[in-house]
Length: 74
Image 1 (cartoon, rainbow, N blue to C red):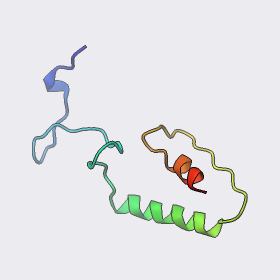
Image 2 (tube, rainbow, N blue to C red):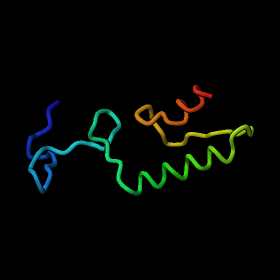
Image 3 (tube, one colour):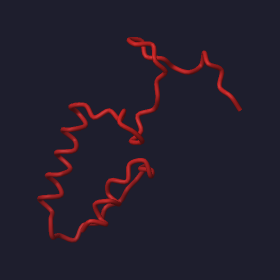
C-alpha cells in the first residue's frame, strides 16, 4: 500500500512535503489563537481549583492527552 508521490501535499512556500498537525514532534503549530485558547483553559482551571469538576474528553485522541495528564497530576 503505497501513496503515489504526486498525491503528497507540498508547502507552496518551500516545496517540502507537508504533514498533519499532530503533537508528535517539534512541528506542532501553536499560533496566537492556540495560545489564547490555552490561556482561557488555564484561567478556567485556576478559577475552579479545589472544586469537584467532571471533564469529558470528546473527540480527543491519544495525540492530545491534555486532560488525562492534568488529572494524573492532581
